[in-house]
Amino acid sequence: MDGNVCSVVATLHELRLCARCILRFIDERKSSSYEESYKNVQGLVSEKYGIEFKSRTNEDENSNGMEVIDDDKTNDKQKTEECAHICPSCLGILQEQCDGTVIKQIEEEVTNSGFEIESFTFSVSLPLCTLVRQHSIFLHLKEKFSDFYSGKTSVDNLPSIKEVFKWVCGPALGLMLGVFFQHESSFQILIKFAYDNGNEELEFLTEVDPSRFKERKAKKRAPVIPLFSVTSIRKALCDLQTAKQLRKYAYCPPSFARYKSYCAEVICSHSSILLAGRYNKYSRTLPQTPWIIDGERMLESSVQEKICDILLSKVQADDCKFSSGGREDIDVRMLGTGRPFVAELINPHKTILSKEFLAHTQKEINLSTTDVKIRHLQVVTKEEYSTLKEAENTKTKTYSCLVWTEKEISEKDLEKLTEIKDLKLQQKTPLRVLHRRPLAVREKVIHSMSTEWKDCHHFTLYLKTMAGTYVKEFVHGDFGRTKPNIGCLLNLEADILELDVESVDVNWPPPLDPSPEALPSSD
Image: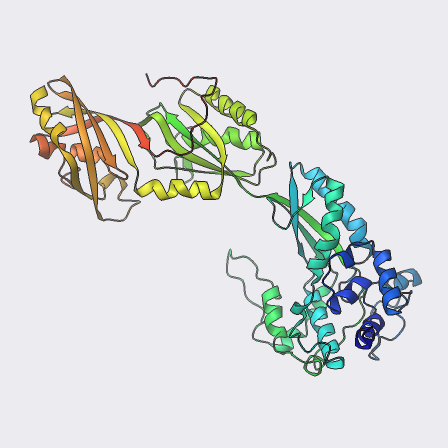
């Protein structure tokens, strides 16, 4: 065996690193080397490298001749002996608790969280002082064994605490939960480790780079910015590239750990689920989204709330973001096959959504109101959702509207409208939306028109338009801001009394088999 490796291992052992951290610092990259129980890994390292793991006390001096920092001289012998077992590199994270107490704590948190899961992944948040400790150990080793570490520029070139924790805990937690651990999964577990008084070990950085670690005065209502962060610590450590430089400010190698790091928090979350479908709106007094002005609700409900309130309850999500392929005004009905919509359910707890479950949810929404009905409710991916967004500027829509004319008209007068094809409009931003849309002139197209005469002052106009066309303004002219308009074309004054969207011509989401409950007609 390479004697150099044995010397490195012996040095790491003298520094009281745990068995798994010893393997990390000799660049052992086989995950199987770490996955056994800690006692077994300890035994394998002992046997292979000829070292013996035994209890020591923090009353000893550490290997670089410095006394262990411990201001509390009243600690009893039991605590002192316990501290002697703590790895100064991982602060105990990769030791026995990695196999037992932490895994059990995570398993309990996941079980109690109420999430349905089919797989999981997790991320680990470490005490910030581990960044300094890893850097310190690496510089010490690089100084003492320059040949062995000649190809390594930083501790980032070695397996990290986070990587090893995942190698060890991922499969073990998977067995306890009965699902697979994967590097990518919709269900994420964030494990936050803490270390008491860890910031004390970072104080020297304020001397290394005073400008970076100034106390920052928080602005009113702004979030408090912590003095130390992963980014600021990493940047400061870049200025300390040798053990000699680091020793001007701190111990190198680091002092023994005074406390064991502990799992302070386990946070479970699930990626958003996108539910898509198409909705019809049969009311002329219902807005698409909540209508709130200056914090005051103007109307009782909305299309969004009638759909999302039930989805939130059924899927047990934290929030729901609603979007659709365009929008209709409050006094406009959405008929035909409906308008495509997507409901993004944030952090859903019920995540296994069968066709039967979605069909039942759709039926529940449809039975809850006569104003809104939905169809084709289904789960879609982000990629599939992008299809809807891409079609927004290319789709066409068909409308029907009841038009009033000041002058009397005949059926013959309306014939000229049916002969017009691909009529180009110049539409200034309508006065009614100018408060929320920038002033601009937009070119839109009326692809075709047909009419149905009602009486000498009324007719129904059917039209197929380019997406984004303001139909109301095309009828009444908006004080000349839309040209040409119905008034110009018929040489009279016209106004619109009712407007319905008959179709949104985009084949999305894919239609499903007809559901048992028939959608009501628009009558």
